Length: 139
Image (cartoon, rainbow, N blue to C red):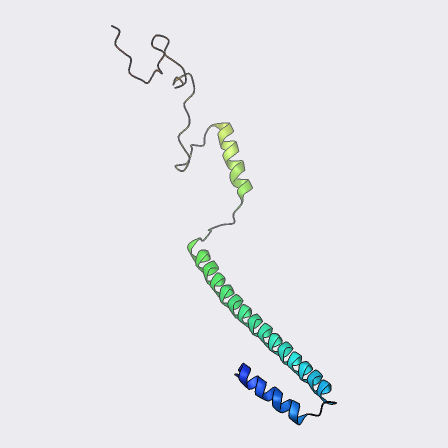
């Protein structure tokens, strides 16, 4: 801070011993210690305030970025009407019960029943192979 090297500190200490009488030396050293403690506390407080200001500045930047992203998402995803998942679910269930609603293009094709398509797990009785695999020629 003050660019005090050990050699300079020794010279200052010798001059202080010569200039300050021995009976006042403990009092001077105590007040010097208290002064250095106050300086350290003030420096730590300043550093803490500086770090807090930096965090607040970073938070402001983050809030600004999040706001911009939120606005971009709102612009890209616009809902025409109110989103009501219960009404959509009710419509799908009643349509499935009545049998008049066709599956949407997003959904997978319906799975065929076991009567129309044999399971791959069933084995062919003659060869022990699944029905889809080519049969071995009997020799």
